[in-house]
Length: 398
Image (cartoon, rainbow, N blue to C red; front, side, top):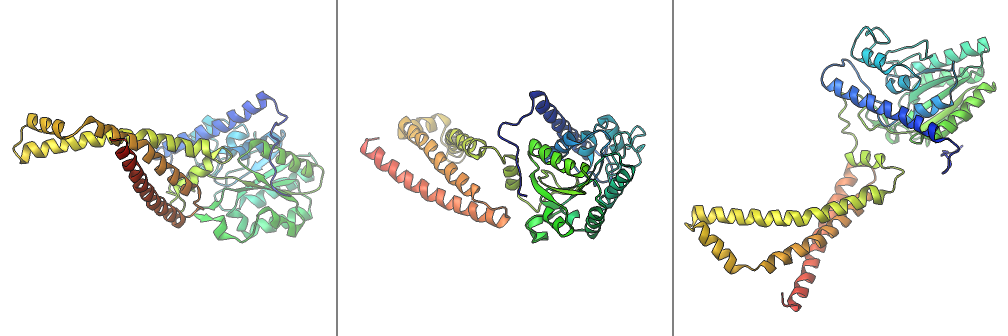
């Protein structure tokens, strides 16, 4: 199955949409505050933020029922908040307080809540996957109709124990949904560099496990896919794989500066699904068209001030004489001519810069190449435009 998106007009109420938004915003604000506290030294150890991936857990929790279980990796704050755990208890654990879910001893990566059926938070890559299958085995044994969500990342998808778990889960028809949170990077390694597989969910086909790829940035698409996966598991057909194509905006952990990707890549992901002309092109063009005339005025004032300092300090010319000579040798029309060129030059620079910027294909080398092209082409167009202006103003007698 290919990636599926929610319909343009989803059959959901305004209250439900607002609820999804509120939960995603809670996770985002919580993680931003956790990042601040980590920087202040109030959170120790490792801290992996979930910023950018909020739609995955919120959408899947909307498809879950009371009693369903979930287990995940060390990037677990969002999962805890989405399943209903108290944000104060989670933050207390992050800051090492006894009011935390693990009495302040587990920290960011090791929190649990039997009441909310949240079984971690695990620091070992992919170790939670077989644990998730074990939870599902218990539910199948008890015949209670519950489903387990086993979350893991694209890096963990290359671990051998994942495929051992796939095999056993399919053999025993376990009610487990394997959720691959493909945020494009396993620590600092891009998925494109770590595997030749066109998709990660299709690896389950070797074990007979169905699945699909989902737009993990669309909460309604996630919910719809989650409902299909849960229905499959509850009907006794065994496991199901969901590969959530998502993105993390921060580094792997708070100690990761994320220098393996460009800022432009992150910015592009932030506006994905939105109109790039409205979000990227038009604001930059307008900004430069407004800023360059202002910079022209500032440069003229700075040039006059610098000339005055040199004239007074080195040439023995008094300030009054300098002002008189400037007024005699220049005309206000010269200022207006220069100022009239500035918006046109700004428009040319911004158009070339945004055009080449949109052509960058996710690599630092490509970014450097397009930047150089934009600079050279902008200089050429400005020289040509200046020649046109000179001809025009000459004919007008200006």
